[in-house]
Image (cartoon, rainbow, N blue to C red; front, side, top):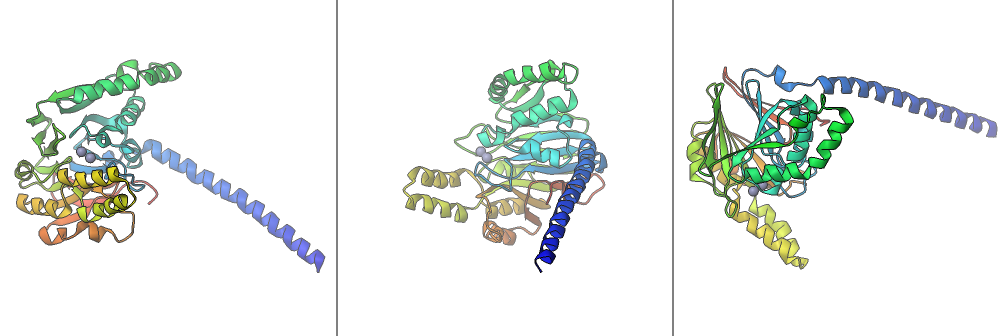
Length: 355
Ligand SMILES: [Zn+2]
Ligand SMILES: [Zn+2]
């Protein structure tokens, strides 16, 4: 009996070792195939001519394991323009198969930290990913020059290591950093060439000034991204007839929960912050009303506050939003891609990642 048990133990041990080795071989094969795919990934090559919105970040400053900081990738034909770059934006772009080396410029809506704290990794990925010979264009309202200069100063030393290590042909020193393009806080048309028109619209995010939304027009299709704002009549007017409104949203019914918890725990500072943020954002219901008033076809909510960390909380976040807008409405997730082909129609897909 004892010998029989010993033999069985040996057999199980051998099977375990064999299984482990097999698992490693399978993992390596999958990894190698994945690496080849990742290096060659170019989502843009497969898109029809038109306007496309890739959600490279749908979160906010509140820590959210499922969402990067604010970032929208706008693809117009073969051009890639990024609106805001919060923490994790570069990682999402890579997962979406949108190579940072293809970025033409970054537009900033305002200078809150959560909209700029992913800029440095994005600039690095673009620089080393395309052997860029000119700095990344950073366009925004007046004040963008200070952001560009500060980031360039902070990463100056890192830049010298990159060139010293990999050589000037791979990492040309002239491609490091940011080239600021400032426009007046009153906005207006900030880009108009190759059939693409981008208009900046001043919005109300006080005390944060300047703050703008951006409207993109390309081949008869239109999308507008709000940036951070209270309901703003100028934005509603500018969104008239657009296909897609990408609007920020904060649900006070939900932010008041951690607010009350902070107060009960004696953390008056956090309680005040959670109360204060209500006065410069838009609720999902208000965003729905704006969409109805502007006559847009679809509304994607982004900059989701607070993080929706409990399954099923989406309904509480939306509140009565669906009752106030007849068009397509959803809470955007990281790596969503909305396509507005020049030929018409609208499709939604999810790009990359494991999920
Ligand atoms: Zn924000
Ligand atoms: Zn803000």
